Amino acid sequence: FDLLTSITGIAAASAIQLLGELLVLPPDMKAKQWVALAG
Image 1 (spheres, rainbow, N blue to C red):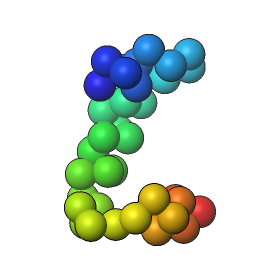
Image 2 (cartoon, rainbow, N blue to C red):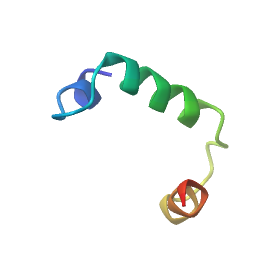
Image 3 (spheres, helix red, strand yellow):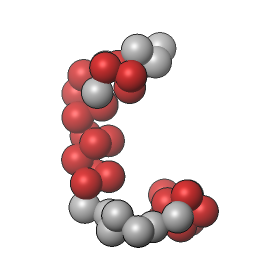
Image 4 (cartoon, rainbow, N blue to C red):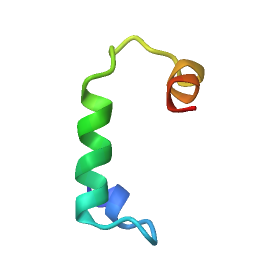
């Protein structure tokens, strides 16, 4: 969370939403699969 909010333009609400979205993804997904899912 702290790492995300240290990025310029990402506030606490955005970081929480992003982490919430990532938690529902299967833990065995590869980085390329994450990118494909994100579009």
